[in-house]
Each structure stands twice: as C-alpha cells, then as structure tokens.
Length: 80
Image 1 (cartoon, helix red, strand yellow):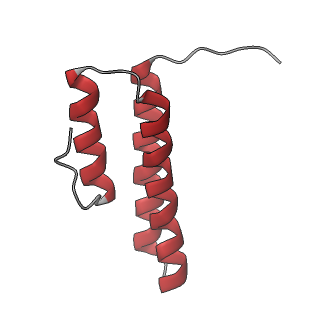
Image 2: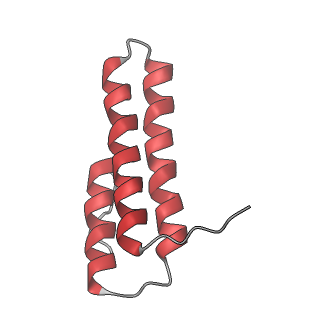
Image 3: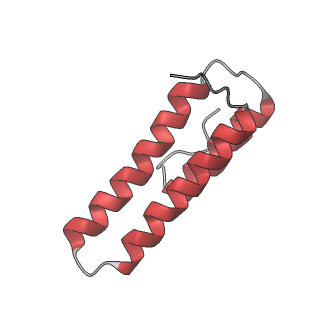
C-alpha cells in the first residue's frame, strides 16, 4: 500500500465537499429517516475533520472549525 500525504488544506477541502454533498442529499430525500441519516453523515465528517486536525493550533484551523460547524449546524460553532 502506497502512502499518500495530504495537506491541511486538502483534508479541509475534501471534508467540506463531503459535508455539502451529504447535506444536499438530505434536502433531496422525501424520507425523514434518510434525511437524518445524511445529516448525521455530514456531522460525522465534521467530527472526523476535528479529530484529524486537532493538533493544528492555528487561527485558520479555529476559523475553519467555526465555518464548518456552521455548515453542519453545530449548536455552538462559536467555540475556539
């Protein structure tokens, strides 16, 4: 298996695209159960991003956390 290195920007972009995809899918479905599943996937992508980037203690990362938290509807996305 070959190793691939991702930059912070690449990881953040990929996760943001996935979040937006899942939220678009949630809006298109008629089923409330399926809609919630897509929303949970979006939130899971956000949590995965948090876990992967948590050691990156920069202002940009904190701003991205707030921005991505807003996208997924995190209840308190104003936290650092």
